[in-house]
Image (tube, rainbow, N blue to C red; front, side, top):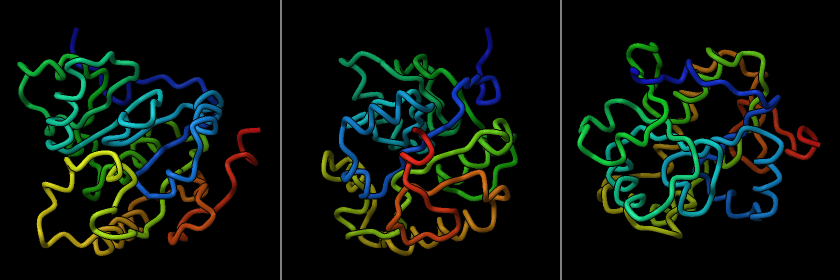
Length: 210
């Protein structure tokens, strides 16, 4: 049987929730995360397994592939994996055979170069009728050392950023891509009421999932 791609995924839930990398994730309790997971299809990004167990974890970067490969050597896989093909070309890696779904940004004609921007375009294409709740879409970095919520749990990503990494510049760039490449703006709800990003309507998640 060949590879499965994102278009092969079936989601029965009425809502899809995405947990991004903004530090506001730290303000959501474990109990609330479980409630969100029970009431929607929860997709996490990158290093989320250090703290959050969703229904699916997505990544697109080779550094994340390296980390995930080590992380799951002695851990049970409890979520679906969605990975960018270019992030993991070595079929001999144990993690390679654990990936459930793949995506290829070129064949899908995805624009931009951020995982969250690609994911939202995929959701527009394959799940046009579902509302998507966004968590951690802060567009406001605390500092380079605490650029993302998972920096409190590991330093793997920080080791690869380099001295020229400027978190706010990267966040502003991502925000511009969301503005330019996401067409169905009313499909996405920003559940961080204090977010610095104004491109999507804001609502508290309990208004949507209760």
